[in-house]
Length: 415
Image (cartoon, rainbow, N blue to C red; front, side, top):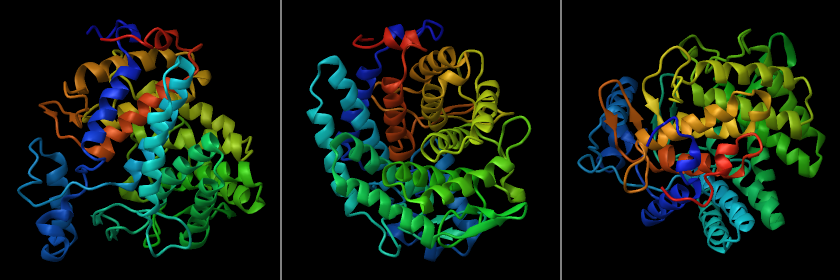
């Protein structure tokens, strides 16, 4: 396929359905880039001597183009965040099916089934509905035991419940998302802003005090969207306060570092995309007009720095490799949602889709993990790669196609 030929040669619904069939065949269970501490029957954490040995095992499993997990006795598992992304993607696919005369029932039924599974995956030790990853996780800053709820995992799941509430009108779905707000407001730490003490940054988990912009903004975006339905001032005020903390730390060129610690100063594409989508939601649902300028400046930076001329999605703003499927999927979401802010977005979206399909799509319907300077890492990761690509393709199906006519011509065609 010629990467410059536009999306007219590709069928987004076709590739969505291929990937959906792959995920269903896997039972929505799979490996994860960060599941190394599930090795040796889950005993790796206790067997390894300390933080750096744990990090070495996690990174070795993540970076290897050969999948040693079966030898290490690492099992495939369902991941709550993967389920949440899948639900959001399925509901968007159902909406597209309704527009095109297909039956939306299979997509809606599968979404409801995954939501039932999510009900049983909740973390026990939280003030509200919250979820964590099915593996121990060791970072340079802190250690998170398996199942410990995080703001990132929990907000992606809660957003899926909100999508379901909007589609089905089932009040229990809204109640679950509202319960996640209790986890955010009652369980998570807050770092006050020295420049404006009423503003703050939410912590990543109950166990740390990090200042990670995408994590805090994901919490703000959920609070803002729930406020849109419940009109509780507490939710709006907290969403605005957390958003202002990150807006003050947006750099002049429109970028954010990953976090505020000295070892968190990198700038990458998909976390920048998270920040932008969250700003958009706080602007719209949380009614914070001052977010508009930062959103526009940040999206211009995103379009300027995270793509090569052929649409290759760059990982970092100054370095291309590794080219990661996660960056591609989030690029679809960011460019489709915010295309009205920059006239370059529709063309970038088409080129990025064509590059991704050419270089990262496997014949079996799933997507490869990464492309480096030397090799392509073809390991299939369900949460990181497959459900993110489902969600990214769902964003293409839900896009305003008046701004991207090449997307419109792709619907209903086959390769």
